[in-house]
Image 1 (tube, rainbow, N blue to C red):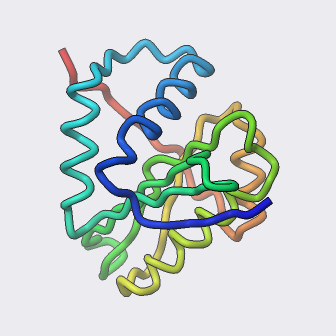
Image 2 (image 1 turned 90 degrees about the vertical axis):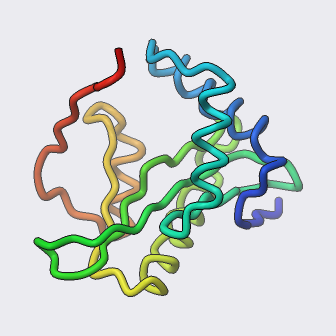
Length: 150
């Protein structure tokens, strides 16, 4: 088994959309995400100098992705990174791909000069929370969200 990490390309759109939809179904997320809207968001992220979308391949097949964003944080007095998405296909979970993607995101955050990197997860996702803790992330408080789409 060979794990390979790389930056995303526009041609990765179908594989990334497939992984995102797989997770939506698994978590029973009903947020409407048309293919066209997903494509627009993906292409925007690819060209944003403050983001990276990392692809994880196993034996040449896209099995996961991670998006990481950089922003200026006044409270941290410097740049901070946020892992927005980490999705690994069901068939590839437990093979080390998620760990490798997170480690690469941390490397980017260091390269960007970030003072911290954040990640969030649903409280019931014990596997993800355990992985984040194993990699040195600490729980600092709840993340609250408000959906703004009509």
